[in-house]
Image 1 (tube, helix red, strand yellow):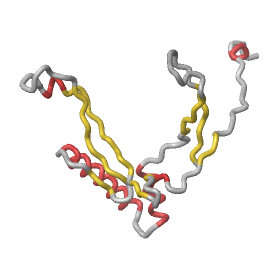
Image 2 (cartoon, rainbow, N blue to C red; image 1 turned 180 degrees about the vertical axis):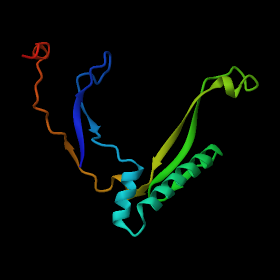
Image 3 (cartoon, rainbow, N blue to C red; image 1 turned 30 degrees about the horizontal axis):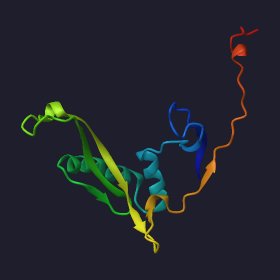
Length: 149
């Protein structure tokens, strides 16, 4: 289940000020080794082989993305590099070192289209949502300042 926590928009001069929204809570990060262990349990491939393939996948994706290609992993999604630039007065004035100020990798999850022409992200099929349990722990700052007996 994907848990969420409610928060209130308190930004000044925002037309949505005071409204409540949900923010997803991520309780853990699963790394390559943990993924490989789960994959090993679910199929006949050894964990070390899975780690080797994932490690190589990252290296190959980096090479392919940096050569200007999109990388599509069927059933997962597509990756591409995007750049952030500042404007130059003319095309002749544009210098990559001066006007390209950042880059990032964009990810587009794999999607399917249902009979109503509505798009669904494959990675979210079957996802369920629930509010994170409330934390009843109350801490008193004054008690924290008291010396230990």
